[in-house]
Length: 390
Image (cartoon, rainbow, N blue to C red):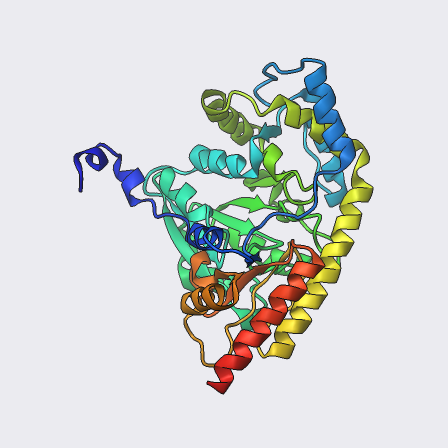
């Protein structure tokens, strides 16, 4: 270890690099690459939202806003989430954040003390574990399974020892599997949460991207509103990833604690993005629905192709990911992904990056154009066929 790295905190030294990043870096070194590794829509933000951002700049609206976010935006958010049967007070129960990721981090720091256990279903988005660690907490992994459609169950929680945890993270529709949970399935989880007095951090950033039925938030179930913080934002449904705007909904005392941390870190979220978000909520439902229909078309295409190729693919019903198994003969998902990118120039993400239960799978984002998807699937088929014959 050099003298310079000695100066780093233990927390910084112990934080591993993102497992996704390695494959991005490999892809960047190559020509003619097709990357299905990025969790980002290939669409631009709806024009009305972009125009609102431009207008705010032209008018010189470049100052801080309220720490909690513009009040008119919080009012629009309160109105927007009623479609999910959620009701929150814009003055005390809503916080506008710099992306949903900041909201997750703030909630962890507001609710988790050093040594506290936080149950994190896996496979799951890669940021949850590190944000638990940044708060001094300890992750209790709760493995979910392909044969159970990656749905979290009472038994999964019990088996993992989640009864001793202080909080439970949920992410449905799920990144990386695309799994969703029904009201009945969430009710079973809610029963466990109430019995063992857990708090729930529910990341619902993909709520608008559900393909076969309506999104259900666990916060709408009996006895859950007062023990749940819901996260959402504009990155996925509105294709506004670079504008970095999200929000949290929760009990006043938790939102107030999150805002106190937010005051010392972000001060307020980007003003230009807040104007874009206002317009997005006012007038962009049609654009969101068009994107959702196109994602659904792509979803059906990639699931069908993977199953034809012989890579068993669970029927994802939300977000914009599928999570196929590696083909027969390949148990090591990282080795498969590395061979595929080097030989066929298709970038996927190994499932193990997302924790226990992800081994032997691959995360595939279908937030790319249909032409790219067809090229990628043809190359994957060619690779798998050649491997069978060799």
